[in-house]
Amino acid sequence: MNVLTFNAGSSSLKYGIYRVDAERAQPLFSRTESMEPNAAGASAATERALESVSASAIRFEAIGHRMVFGGPEDAPTFASPALFTRLERFERLDPLHAPSALAALRTTHRRFAALPNVLCFDTAFFRDLPERARVLPIENEEPHFLRRYGFHGLSYDYVRSALGAELGSRAILAHLGSGASLAALRDGKPVESTMGFSPLGGILMATRPGDLDPGALLYLIEERGMNAAALRRLLEERSGIRALSGGERDLRCLLERSDDPRAQFAVEAFCISVIKAAGALAALLGGIESFVFTGGVGEHLAPIRSTIVRGLAHLGLQLENEANERNAALISTPASPVRVHIVATDENATIARAVAALVATSSEPHR
Image (cartoon, rainbow, N blue to C red; front, side, top):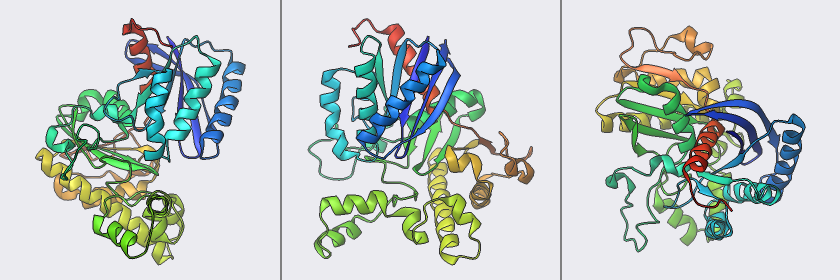
């Protein structure tokens, strides 16, 4: 089956056609379209993408989209009016991602209503987290919905599939990009994630703060008069690396500013947040056999990887500097007790596999 896939981010739309054979997804065509970070921008970018796909003359039998948050019902799902109604709630809960993803899905569903249009959720990878990793320690009238989930699941699924047995029984996966998180896997199954109910928590990110004392938020509400909308803008757009550096969110740019104390402070803070989280996950696992870097930062910024690995040396990570500088697939030394990998993630390949599996096994109508 050939599957057309879409991954709408905050400023770009990644799309491609994949040939799915058994559990493998081979890219036949892939592009990235820039877009405005809103529903209208995503719709326009999707229309341009469909023109490019049409020009490629490659036929496809189904379409898949990424959705970050789907609540507890996060299995891959056929697009339908009922699905759109259910997910409209999440446009408010996840304004960075949900409006764009839904707009792209609505566009392809309208243009290709005769084909299966499938939505794949980032949280589905973590659906079997242990109960102790899912419960929020608050009085809670909605424990089924208001709980910890975990994100970047499509990326982690791809990494797990790509490495297979090389992961070993105890692994930490680090998806480091504008959004960033770590996940702990035991025997290939996730047992913990740094993210929780939303993609705001966990480690430091480009414009998001990661874990933050709730008392600070109460202070901003009670003493500074911030309302929910202002607080959301602060947490999603004006925090994290951007706040620490004085306005720059791109770690690559900050690494180049070696004479700028604020730039170097932001870089150090990011690396330390990853080291702290990895140390906690390693303690939970009782030690690790492999550590995996993925995502735009994890795949391409050797100085960031080097700093993180040095901070985790006590866990058995030993870096082969030359391999790290050339972004090799394996960057640990032959004698390293912990294997350190770089995997170029492909969330769209995971989407393609999930779509093909759903279409092949479903007896329900897809519209």
